[in-house]
Amino acid sequence: MKRIEEKFAALRAKHEKALIVYLTAGDPSLSVTKKLILALEKAGADILEIGVPFSDPTADGPVIQAAAQRALKAGTTLQGVLDLVTEVRKISEIPIVLFGYFNPIFSCGVRGFAYAARKAGVDGVLVVDLPYEEAGELRDYTDAAGIDFISLVAPTTGKERLKKIINKASGFLYYISITGVTGTAAPKIDPIKTEVEAIHKITNLPVAVGFGISKPEQARKIARFADGVVIGSSVVRLIDENKNNSDLLKILSDYIGNIKKELR
Amino acid sequence: MGEEDIRRQAPNVFRMKILGAEVVPVKSGTATLKDAMNEAMRYWVSSVRDTFYIIGTTAGPHPYPRMVRDFQSVIGRETKRQIMKLEGRNPDVMIACVGGGSNAMGTFYPFRNEKHIAMYGVEAAGLGLHTPQHSASINGGKVGVLHGNKTYLLQDEHGQVRDAYSIAAGLDYPGVGPEHAYFHKTKKVKYVTVTDKEAVRDFSFLSLQEGIIPALESSHAIACAMKMAPKMAKNKIIVVCLSGRGDKDAQTIIEKGVIR
Image (cartoon, rainbow over all chains, first blue to last red; front, top):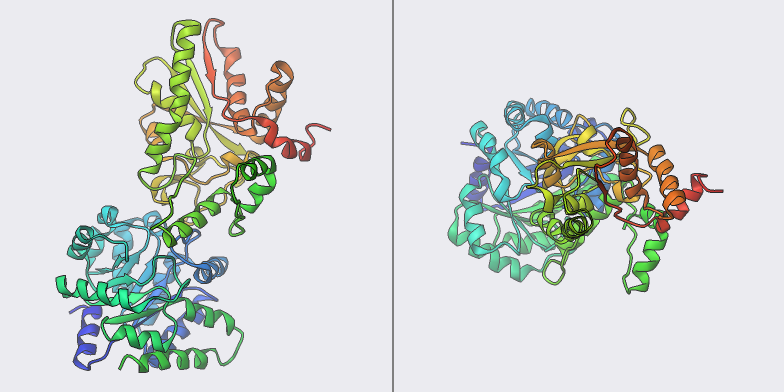
């Protein structure tokens, strides 16, 4: 069984919901990102989304845009991120999803990327600017490599398209909780509940909800009907605000621990 | 609109404001067209239920390149009518500048099935193709994906999009419309380059000789025509698309010390 599938199964058995944590690789540096990953796992993160920085992150709000800029300035590359995953895999089995944009992957070659990602120990990829209609260009190779192709579903996704997306998705479905870019608004819970319940009726894939979730209270409400909650911008902001603070790992661990508590 | 472009294109900004537009400056990245497009897309994604996204160039996600091409084709259709009336035949050469590529696509498209017309798309070589300071996506970039289209892109070896540069704000974009990528691949259109220096020189030339002040963008097309004309027979016809007026570039021209 694959790591992501295993993780959701194990959580289900414990009546827990998944806490999926996003962070931008290389912000402030890849070596710090490695420490952060291990601390996040210890603090209760179930799955990690590792952001591969891109020069033009059109799906991201100001917080993650700035993180990508810092990471690129620090010299972060896709290969560097894969090397980081290789390092993490030596000591951790936490499921890892690479989150990013298509051009760096396309530039390195989709076939080579899929192979390298598998070898590094990547479990899933989420490419935000690769819509369903074009996704085959990458998915054919990630499917062959045994890497989950995490697909986004938005409040604006129509029923027919939703079915098509689900048909090709694996790992989990990522439900975007706001009509917008990352970290820019607090989600309204009721409409998400309706949508997620509708999705549950047509697929057995776990559904995680993200974009705009930052508080334990929101996580608790969403976890009542979703299989997982994604926290991103607030984590990235916390890392940036405390990058020179010797208590960074503790501050981050406390924040994550408090949210995970609501999912148990 | 990119903050840098707002500065460079002040007269156009005034015109937009006179016509009732609110112009929102974008400060991220190089504060030019690419960053304005990123920001427009983010805004659109956030307000898609009650907002239309419109764009003036042939780049971006489908169906925008096609829509802009069809609207801009008025240029080529009028060219066809006028040249038939004036000369009774098609031109031998057609030249237009290419940033995102809207005026060029509009010029070329209605002629795409005509044989014996040599079409030239002129990219901005900025300070030179050998420097990083240019906007020549076809001549100096490679295939990539940005803003929802796969096309030639200025990018580094890791697939990060590079900043474009040209003295002409309208050419200052690291990509090019996907249909131009296709015309390049099928050799329908030949894509060449002209530097800042050449464009400014022939901006002055056209202004002095004809009393027509071309936009710095269009001056790239003029410079290409100036290179070709001396090598052609006198009975040949060249059509150059003057896509814009140079009034808007007065500030840049003064800053560059061309006019004192």
